[in-house]
Amino acid sequence: MKMNKMMKRIVTAFLALAMMITIIPAQKVEAVTNTRINVNTMQSVSLNPEEEAMYSFKAPQDGYFRIEATLIEKRSMWSADFTVFDATGRQITETLSAKEPGRSCSTALFASKGGQVFNIKVDSPFDQVVVDFKVVYNTSANWENEFNNSAKTACILKNNQYKYGSITYDDEYDYFKFAVAKTSKVKITFGPNEVTGNDNNWDVDIINTNNETVSLFHGTKTIKAKTVYLKKGTYYLRVHSNFFNAKNVEYKIKYQASAYTVKAPSLSKVTVKVSNSIFSKGKRYLNKISLKTSGYVDGYTVQVAKKKSMAGKYISTNVFRSPYNNYVTSKTIRFSDYTYKNGLKSKKATYYVRVRGIVKDPFGHFIYGKYSKIKKVTK
View 1 (tube, rainbow, N blue to C red):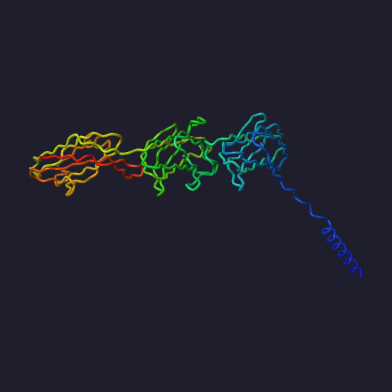
View 2: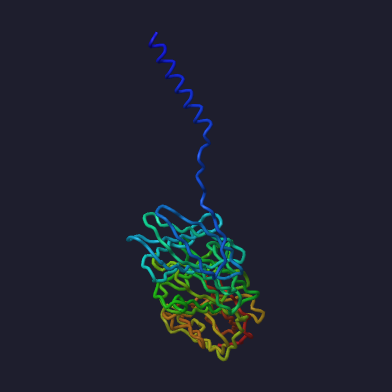
C-alpha cells in the first residue's frame, strides 16, 4: 500500500514537471544583427569574449576598397579579427587581425562593381576589445571587377588604357579581354611594382578563342613590354602570381593596338649561279635575292616559276629569319645549291621570281603580305 502511494507521488511529480516544461517558453538564441554601414565612415565596436558583430555595405560605384582598423583597447594578448565576404558568403580577403592598440592596419585592396554588397564579420574569441574601423572605398573605372577568374567573366580592356588589379584571397587567375578589328601590331605592357613597389614574380599569358595559350611574361619583377602581331579576333590576357605571398599585390596592365599590314617587298636583284659540284655540275640554282622591305617580317615566301603567270613553279617555300639562320636577313635571302639544286634546269633558262613577307602571331600562325612584283632572271 505504501509502495502504491509512493509511486503515485513520483508519477504526479513527473507530470507536474512535464507541464511546467511545456508551459515555460523556450529561450530564443538571438541572431547576430547585420548592420548596414556607409563607406568611408568610421565605425566603433565593443566586443565581449566569444562575441561577434556583422556589418554590410554596398559599393557605390565601380572601384576598390580595403578595411582599415585600429584597436583601441584590449585586456589580454588577443586581437580583433575582421573577415570580409561577398553576398554569397565567399571570403574575399585574408582575415585582418588588429593586435596592437593605437596602430592602424588594413586588408589588401579588393576591386568591385558598383552595387555589390559585402559583409564584414568582427570577432574576438578570447578577449574583450574596443576597435574602430571603416571601409575605405575609392571610385575608379580603371580597376578590374572581381571575380574575373575565367574567360567568361573577363574584365574588358580598352586600347591604350591601363587596368589595375590584384590576385585576390582565393583567386588563382585574373582574366582580361580585348579585340582587334583587323591585323594589328599590339604592344602589351605589364608591371607588378607600379602601384605598391612590391617585388613579386608573375606570369602573364595570351589566349585566343581556340584556347591556344602562350606565355608573354614569366618571373616578372619590373614593368615589361612585349610586341606581338595579331589577326582580327578576340584575345584574353591571363595574370597569375607565381608565389602565394604575392596575392593581393597590385599590378597594372594594358595593350596598345595599331593596324598593321605586311607590306610587299621589292626585289632589287636576283642572282643565279651554275654549280661546279661533282654531284650537281652544271645545275643552275637561285643564289641570292636582294630585298627592299618596309616594316617588320619574320620571314618570306619565295616562289620561282618558268612562266610569268607563275605557273609551273620550280620553288614555292617559306624561309624564316632567326638568330641561327645567316641565310635570311631583312635585306637578303641566300640559298645553297644543295637545297634547291633539284628545282632548276641545267640548261640556260629564264626564271620568274616573287617574294612576300610573313609575320607570325604568338600562336605560330602565319600572317601573309602581298607578293612583290615579279622579277625576270635569265641565266
